[in-house]
Length: 405
Image (cartoon, rainbow, N blue to C red; front, side):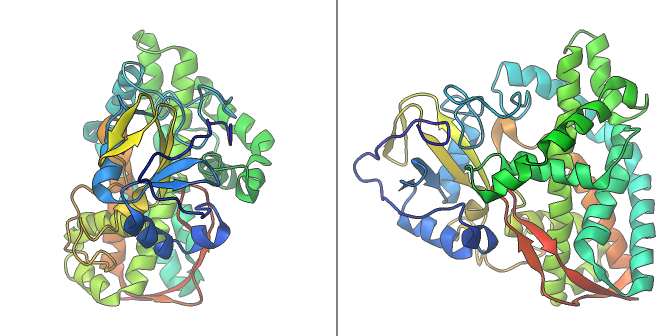
């Protein structure tokens, strides 16, 4: 066993690559790793963690989409729940497969349907206007804390109906959940050191008596009254809002700002036509991939691209690499707002496609539209620094300057 899953030897014809995809230098600057991963073959064996890694688009999408052969219920990190004990009860939306997943997915999808969240649009817009207006007055600011974190933490707990809100705990909880998907390295250990403080607070804040009766959380608990889920399951689903809905949105906003500051000619297109906010966000997702790696476990002996895969094999699906595959995307290293990257892997694929993607799009559309209408130029005011995380590609700090129209 290694990191909670079975050690195995690669079959004939599988390239062996002695590299650590969780090394700090790769997490901070992964482009060369992705390119080499794709170049070496459809599947590559990484002996340090005894895993296969997939970095090309077609194979990654096949593995990520087929929930019968490649399951999530054995963990979407290195730990195989068939053998290793997870650090927390497995997510009943992310770390289950049909038919159990079908039940909980139905409840979550109803709460996050376009109809259910449509009433949030005006609130999101007003909050974006307030925050962007304040930043315009300041001129230069720290974009991660002052916008990327500030906006989701201002709107998301309110949308869920949370009575309690704590920016640091909300943001750090998501970072902790995603770091936990990697090996027992310094990033995972630093994140898990916060668990004793953060996890009890999150659990209490998501209890039914700490939620308003008119938020998204109340829609989840309504399913308890209808006999669809238990009270305990409802609490876990509300917590899933926070682990998947805050940190990834923080990352998405930060990445969007980084893309627009790095590509001023593309920002000119958004200014000229703010309705491009949605396709702009889709290209941000493809180009930066907020969730860079998720794992699947082979639940049977099978094969992909002619490569034999034994039952119990852990496979790292490098979603960020798939989103940069030149076999799928023309000129993939270029950020292009008119690309319309249908099929990108940033929100996953198949039955496990991100259930909260409608809400994420609504949040980013509000922010990007307000930027296009009110900000003439987005400029770097210092060096952008990335934060290493075992599963998320996130900015740590990014000094920016807004110049008004």
